[in-house]
Amino acid sequence: MTHSQRTYECSTGTGLDYGIRPDRMPGYITPIDRFFLRSHAPTPHLDAARWSLRIEGSGVREPITYTYADLWDRFPLVSMVRTIECAGNRRVLFGEAYERKFEGTQWGRGAIGTAEWTGVRLRDLLEPAGITPGAREVMPEALDEVQTRRPMPLAKALADDTLLALAMNGEPLPLDHGYPARVVVSGWLGAASIKWVGRIEVSEHPLHVPWNTEDYVLIGPDYPPQAPSLGMPITGMPVASLVELPWPARLRPVPQVVRGRAFAGENRVTAVEYRIDEGSWQEASLAPPEIPGAWVRWQFGWDPEPGDHTIRVRATDDQGRTQPDTVPWNDLGYCFHPVLSHPIRVESTT
Image (cartoon, rainbow, N blue to C red; front, side, top):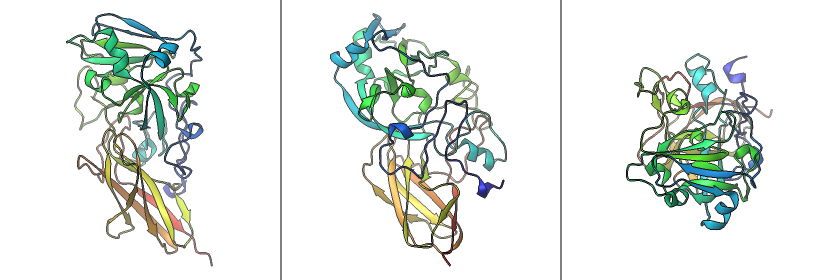
């Protein structure tokens, strides 16, 4: 099978991982039943009536425990639209660019989704425990069988848009998306948004676990180890773009609108450009909303001629970062975000 014949729309890995279809996203928000799934262990079936959240560690003065009812009844609820993307998104394309195959979930372009998350700001839950002056890191821990966990700096945990989510798109969290509660860490890799949270450790010392020392780190010649990590732990996601067409795509030779999304992690996408074949770069139109931590929709008109074509798209964020033409190798296939050459065949109607 040649490169142009392959499709990468619904990748599977452990049997727990499913991607979106980029050509089937009519709205800004990703419906729950189409939102990508990535889990490190089977979904735990938790009873909210018996569930509790424990906050403890050297970085708090007094450990505190909340019930599910406490979260709904005692704290202000906030809603925010945020995009979550797996750091391994586009791993298959990364491997093809270097003519190698990575281990790990074989994602195409579908390990990304955007939802409205409703819950309690994480800082509102931490502050009653009395954060110590020396507190440095905060680590949510899952109630799955492998205790999935990943630390973040205290400042990120206290940010306005770091959330302990209880609902997704106006409904209580589905089991596979973290019921009864999950963390949403705006703009960071999906692995930071821990599902099925049952414990949060606040520490006065750096925290090292497999998910920030061995996995979800950039390992390679361009990424010197940050001991005890084998490489550079991934935090915010880089700027990248997505064409809402199958890979490869087949189109009719009629005027049409090409659409897509662009995402820049913690930042806001400010511009998207496109290039057809060897033509010049042109500016695509952006559609609201345009907010940090969430993707933006873009579009342009095209009247294609029959034959084989290539669409290239590059996005720029509010920090002036633009998608590069290439990215350095890393051993685990993370953060592949260069300009992609999207194959298009326009078929004659005659």
